[in-house]
Length: 287
Image (cartoon, rainbow, N blue to C red; front, side, top):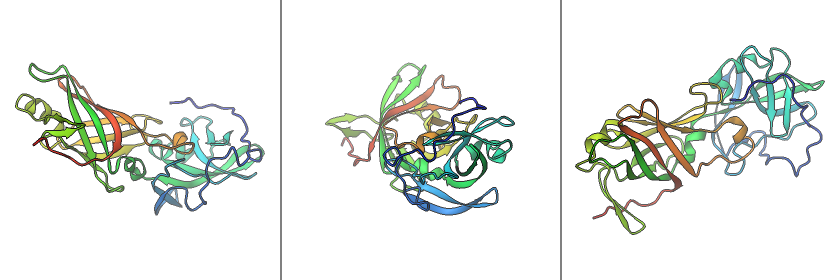
């Protein structure tokens, strides 16, 4: 988490050329898919349900008096407004209700009013729905390993694994396709994770079916602690780093490699699910 700062460079509002600017969708289409508006601090606010493939969120170009970005800072401290074009200090008390809500400040872009070199007012501009983050896994798969920490005798420390995610970009869920059956990949047969020697050990964390729900917490433990979570039917959950606002306003967000680590004490469990993210492929049983 970055510390709050009291003095920053003035936002170069009128000096940014079109060549320097991020892609700009119209003010009404900052995301590839927009959802139903919600009320945020009394403002009717558009919602983002799926990111663009290039720059995840397209912010309109700034003017001499208006810019689009996000707030960063600590409760009770001087905070800062950021956009892809620069940063600017915020007048005392402006945006305090946003900063004081760690969950809201981690998912809300604002429209800033600028006068005399500082932000004098902000209002909610774009609310990032959970589905915008989780949908990057829709119709994808993770191929890699389920890694055990301190497994008992007869249980390997690493098992081949492929997780297939649902095709629905709004309500994403996943399942391990080789959980109960062996699966062919690249000419090889990869065994089921629930073999006779591993079943009891694997089930204790991943349940009976190897299925997950996928969710996003923009500030799980603290501001800036963005996590994507795989929740098992058994109870334990696994986390990997999610996007922060600075990333999704300045570039694409589509992880190619992930490492989901168990949330809690991993000793004697399947502690990590790791692998490469790619297009979902057909499941071919070994026999």
